[in-house]
Length: 295
Image 1 (cartoon, one colour):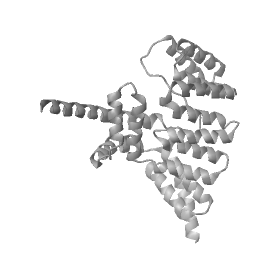
Image 2 (cartoon, one colour):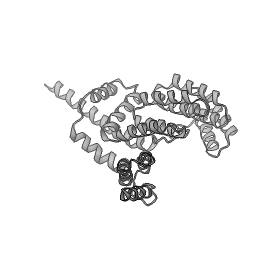
Image 3 (cartoon, helix red, strand yellow):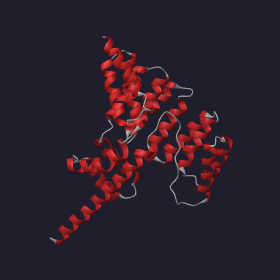
Image 4 (cartoon, one colour):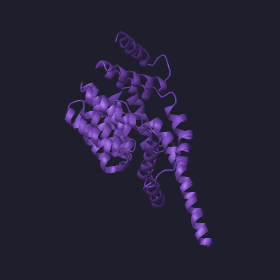
């Protein structure tokens, strides 16, 4: 009886620890994973002091200052000291792309896919950003691959939508941005955080087993409400100008098509997410209302 009780206590501790990890993951992800249509960089974990990280820091400073040749040299030195330094590989690919060395950037990102499957979605998103410079078909394929792998695919949908918008495929752009918006809910973030944990904590089989068990279990409303209170409303959806911009973009798509009722719906959503006079949705909504009055 005591053994059974001890086992239940241990499982409760593990599950509580996992739920705490999920909260931490969501809090970090909602700030780190907002990826617009740009090449993005990754910082290494703090506190890990070595020659590789020193050169990584020099390189990142140079990259931020647009000193691209210098950044490339420093990232290559960081990788010489640590051949498995995947953050350096990704940022090196960004630097290569900025210097116009697109094939080198792709080759570098392929190394990331081999070395770090836990961040494969980031490798494919960066790869898509490189490809769109010279090959739209391969860029589209890379974005779709990122969507299939991303624990939080809404961001990959947004990136694909931005890509379609940039090549004037507005219908496809709207469809994908709307898919991303549909995933802005606590269920999506909860499951995404668990998937991130499964990738991140691969060296802890007991944690992985419990994460998979939670993933396959219907989440109780009580747990969702806790996450909603702790994370979703307070850390993500409050004054979220990025999501407001996506709603405004879909609204503008409908406005272009003179579908005023649909446009109004998305402009109002945009204002709900970011109630600021800097939000362009206010002006777009005024345009919609003026057109509706004319009918």
